[in-house]
Image (cartoon, rainbow, N blue to C red; front, top):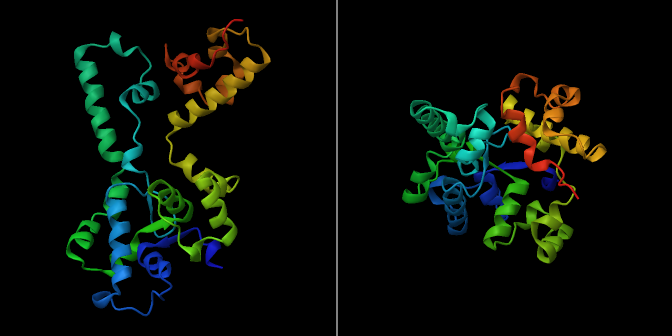
Length: 249
């Protein structure tokens, strides 16, 4: 069943949306409703309103999801930003600009020909088959933009749930291990360590709310299971966990 397919190309998606076989049309004389849907999807991908996937279904980093400068510093700086020299601050800012440029590079590369598709109405099947869209990402896009999801890709129950409670009701408990693995592998080691350190800190503070931040920074479980051993700089671990410390009653 097509409902068990996690991702489809823009070409196939636009055709199936209108119950048309994607193998039986001529790119030079597509039905108008399919043209409109292709242009609609291309525009959304160009604007990064839809995170695109490659042909194997791997979702690419969306340029709109870059972290802000403050969080970037938190993940990449061991010292206090204000204690740095002007030259060091400028270097960090330049590095941040480079991070912004490179973060969504694969997304932008995949959709770079979509501008031509949208503006000139030239529908190159090869181009449109290279870019895929994840099923649940499309559902989220439909929810945000008030678009009825395509019937062919969602069961009647899912569509009813969507009408009643939006995407949260449909996707409740539906994220697969592959979704989690894909997200995790998209992070660098320091980002992974930050997430794990925070999770371990929550557990340790739940067991002993009186533990100090200093004690937690040096805790063996933080070092081992939090993956934070390489990041023992003056402020790194402290900055990762300080907002989690239980307040005194």
